[in-house]
Length: 109
Image (cartoon, rainbow, N blue to C red; front, top):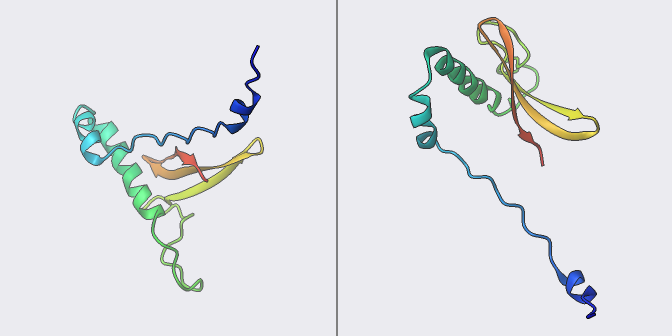
């Protein structure tokens, strides 16, 4: 039997395949089929993403907004969590119809 150990040692790990990125044009045909409640939930998620993605203010003395507030805008923010020693994992937190919602965004690299 031929020794294959030199072959195995020279193998390089496969690069991670990047998941396909959806564009708004990809989502629109699906969103067209959603009912009003589903559309409002998606709008709340998009609003929360836009607010949570705002850059941090330059001065800490007077913040542009309080990301933890529960005012009329609902306190939209990202939360990074460690789960069982793994992570961190990013979640988008927001309020919709008086209920706190959470959407998993992805693992932070």
